[in-house]
Length: 331
Image (tube, helix red, strand yellow):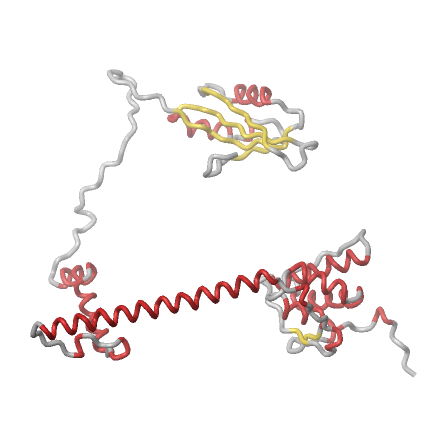
């Protein structure tokens, strides 16, 4: 007599499923309804309809289906209803993730497929679809009227030309469906020959070659004056900002302390101004962060970056990196 296998050791649907047949009513329902129902509605329906055991079984099935590409969170320290709701939400997110390739699930017990009532249908979305459909139908009517106007215009031109004695045959106005392939081919050939590329190819075939790179006169690059003896004219004094993000500071750090730190580090470098703006930290009670803007002469910008981005310039444990402002000018 065979011993009875305990329930917790019995194989689940995930273990017995094969790649060609994945059975799970919950995932089957989510896959078929996630494109037509709202996320919250699907989670609410599945949470109210399925039991904790069915939700856990669906979690095991979808974990085996995705393998190591996606890991589901184990929800603890919450009630059974909340745990069931969070697990269902994780399953729906995986079904909606375009980067996850899931197999097609099927159902063997249609009694375990919840019915979707009218309370879960977004009536406003249906009304928007109907309004868009009506607008498309009206646009077709306008296009039909424009086509009729074009036909009347062509008919009038044909009548005026006939009255004046000109001969116009039907081939002068061929229908779109009557245009032969040769007509389009000849038009494409003419366009290709008259285009810039066609003219260039014809000149190249006639013997005109491009001037070699070696014989070209090199372009003069712009220079920046560096003479110290010629002082007849003076250049305008231009300044640049070295923006730094300084973090892992003590929560009680003051801006004056940062300014003193910069002045003690600059050495012979001339610093015109130092601005410190405190940034909002995620954990303000643990550390503080600042945006430090150091204004120096433009000619000393490279030296300033090398000086203030050196590990020896800051106390131990301070995190420093370049700070880049947003395009809209905000911090």
